[in-house]
Every structure is written in structure tokens, then in C-alpha cells.
Image (cartoon, rainbow, N blue to C red; front, side, top):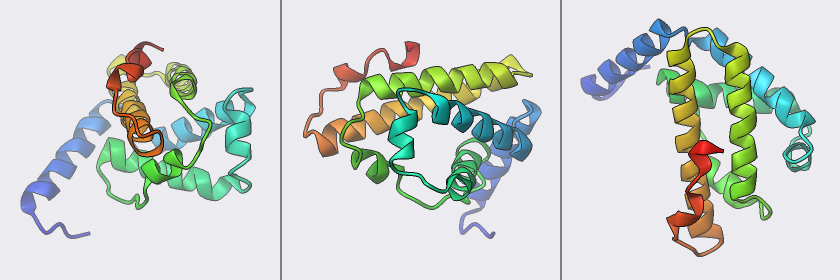
Length: 155
């Protein structure tokens, strides 16, 4: 892939190299996604929400690996609109995002090799949860009060 801007290419390389130094690479992302979604599928809170929307897990897991590769490695392979997907789920709210983060952090602890890697990935997950919940509040619920999101980072 050729970047139109040399700065963008340099930023992607720096992101990938920084992640690799912590042990975050495609194999790590593969394990993270597989183990995390195994927890989600078995979770009594989140499992039914996912089961109602995903019948073929293979493509979903592949897509989530692309998403996390883009987030953590800057590889820019993911194309999609996670906000629209989440806004369209009427029952999800802060409680569900807190549960998602609990499972995500548990998966990170299971995989932990470098505590710095765990911290980096957890921070990204928290930022994503905050962003999605904010988008839901604004787009779906017509609310813009971000006070409702406080506490996600410490769920």
C-alpha cells in the first residue's frame, strides 16, 4: 500500500515498530480476538446480544482482527463503520460497555507477556468504548451528556 503522504507512512511504521517492541504483532492480535470473543460468546450478558446478530463467527473474527490490526499496528486494513453497527443495537448502554471492558481486560491478563503491552491495548479499548458510547448517546438517544460515560475506564 502506498501512502499519499510520507508522514502517514512514517507514522504507521513507528506505530507498528512501537507495538512490536511490546510484543503486539499479528499473532498477538489473533490470540486476543479469538480468546476475547470466546469469552463474549459464553457471557450471559453479552453472549445473547452477539448471538442475535452473528451466525457465522469466522468472518466476524477476521474482521475484528483487521480492526485491531488497524488500531494497534496502524496497518489500515479495516474498512467499516463500527459506530453505525453499535448505534443500531437498541439495548446496549454503559452497562454493556463496562461488561465488554471487564471481559477484554480479563483476556489481556490471560495473554499478558509485557505489562506495558497490556496497558497500551487496554487504553485503546477504553478509548473505543468511550467513543462508541458517546456516539450512541448522541446519535441514537439524542443525548450529549458525557457525564453518563464516567466510570468506563474503571469498570
